[in-house]
Every structure is written in C-alpha cells, then in structure tokens.
Image 1 (cartoon, helix red, strand yellow):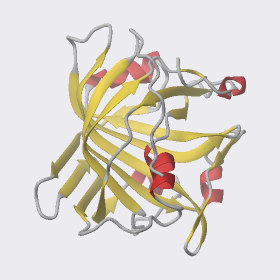
Image 2 (tube, helix red, strand yellow; image 1 turned 90 degrees about the horizontal axis):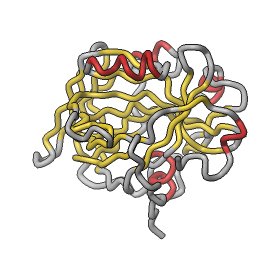
Image 3 (spheres, helix red, strand yellow; image 1 turned 135 degrees about the vertical axis):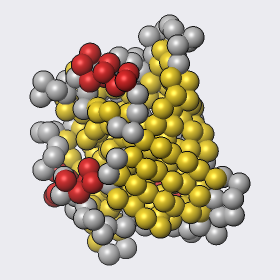
Length: 256
C-alpha cells in the first residue's frame, strides 16, 4: 500500500500559496523526556521505536520560497530562504508538529512576528542544490546553522523508527497541522496542505543546528537521523493562524 496523502481543503481567498524549492527535511532523533519539557500541557512527543530503543524526532525544514503570495494579492510575491524548526507531537491526541520557531530571509517576517505573534526571526539564509549532479548535493548556510548533504546511491530499505515507506511518508513528511507558542504566551495553530512528497534520500556530511542545541535536544556532534529532499513542492498555507483551543482539535478543524 502506498501513502495517498490527504484531501486538499478548498483554497480560500485569504489563504497563501508558495512553491518550496530545494526543499529538505533534516531530522534528528531526540530523547522524548527532553522534548516533553518544551511542550505545553496536553502536548506530548510522538514516540517511536528505533533499532536500539524508544525515541522522538525533531526536524529542521529548509527551502527557498518562490512566489509566496496571498491569494487575494497574487501580483505581490516574495522569494526568500526559510527554515522551520519543528518536533513531531500529538496535541490532545491529535498528531502534528510543534514549531519552536522559523527563520526567514525577508523583511516580511514582521507580519507573522507582530500581527500573528509567531516565533519568527530574520536571518540570512542560502539554500543551494545540484539535483543533476552525481551524487546530487544540497547545502544550507544560515547564520550559525549549516548543513551539507549528498544523495545516497540507493534509498534505504527501511528508515529507522518506521514500519515502512507509508509510515514515514505520513508521519515525517505529511503533517498538516502545527502549533506554536505565541508572543503573548498562548498557543497558536495553523494548517497547510501539499501533495505527497516523493523525496530523495540524502546523508549529511556536515550538519549544525544550534537552535536544537540550545534547547538541549542535540549536541554539536549529533548526526542527523535522515535527510529527505525534493527539488520543489507546492504548498497551500491556511492563513491566518489562530489561537488554539483544545476543543478545536476535533476532526475537520484543520480545513478552514
């Protein structure tokens, strides 16, 4: 059985859309107890069983936004680098991702910062890739974060911690609901949609993500669990984000 993705919610005039170029998910295995200390009440790490025991995952998701725009203003688009720092969690039993923060290489970062109270910051970000090279290469440089990765000769037969391709495609590449700590201390939420990823498997030759180090989740010497990358991926973003209330976690909430 192949993961078929999720139904696409009907795009609304106030939603946003973008193409994410040179898209990569750089994941790290972390201690669930260490991760749980950073989560609000009702949120819990999504635990999985690895070859040598239980654990949880966090990811740095890096890409270049191409023509990010709101649907009501399609003629005004932006191109810039972006990194989302996220953990795989459940919120009152519902799976999704907790966002520790986002780095954006554009002045428009002020909108999510101040209008929506999101934990975003401005940073210089450069994402490069050589998809036709042998092996394919991917590189990120962004302030104190960096990563270089090359494509594996063959995809792994199994991704540690997952039962099979359908499992990791659904859990690692396709969470559509996210939460974050707002600047006022409350929890915010928003949802997205994208088609099923068809990622290529890379291995990191160098990787540093001090955001996770400062949270006590990894160390300077930690090696990524996996690097999944794709040349481009279309996203719908169901703006604006909203205040999260536990009763909103019922089915249907993520399709505004």
